[in-house]
Length: 400
Image (tube, rainbow, N blue to C red):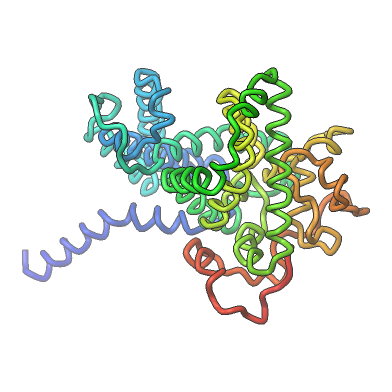
């Protein structure tokens, strides 16, 4: 074989080797509905599961740096191992089956490679010994569990009860919002440390142990309802300030720039807004001293509503829509229709907007369009994080 032939053979081998990576990368930059029966849907599921399994294996190897302290003490390691094993089997079976059937081979080869890498690194049998508990960390475990749980729950709900029936799961700009979702979870440690520091140093002097004990003595259900009300009052006025103070709006505009509402849309948020809002909402809860059980209940409620109220979901709420914030209610807040500007601020109790005169009044049943007025927000995670700090442009419109 000539030298030229050897070079050509080597080049072809390299191209074949990198083709699965290139094709997968190209797929991740696309949007639109996935057609069934072509192996692409199962391939995407296999790729996603394979990637999450690989991350989970890394979390098993370095729990002191990659897992959240508040969560790691509540895990059942045996259950997590079983979940990881099932994930590896499902991802491996789907991808290998598609490769054998010659359906989306390159995508499924990439998914199978991720599964093999996870297994090679120990899979579900990675030993977990003693490790230090007070180390810097990123919330990789919370990212894996939340992404897996949210996808399983909310994608199903959106398909069963859609507001917009033709809306694709992989709609435009989903990549940007997934990056927001990931970063917000990865910085959970930094965010919690910052919020905890600010709460103790800014509001610690307001704490009264006797008053806090009286609050903790309230039965659980009324205490939880009171906790949500206090949090929502703080959320309402903080949220309203984001819309009415031009400097704050530049940060909040990032959240409002999403033009397609679904379960992932609520993740689009500037990191500084995330921290500032947490301080403003948690400060009164910290001062009043709600019980740990009540705070855990509140965290579950706010976690669910933050995702659900952005989801592509429509249900017959009846009179409940005047009491609780629903997707119908919050979708109007994200609308750029004239009657929706600076309305529907509440996060939990819709009656707050009716009480303060900021509820949307419209003859239309649903909004016509979403996003900031003028559509001036750049796409891309980094550009959106930098947006509030750039010089004010003429196209920076009003709140929406």
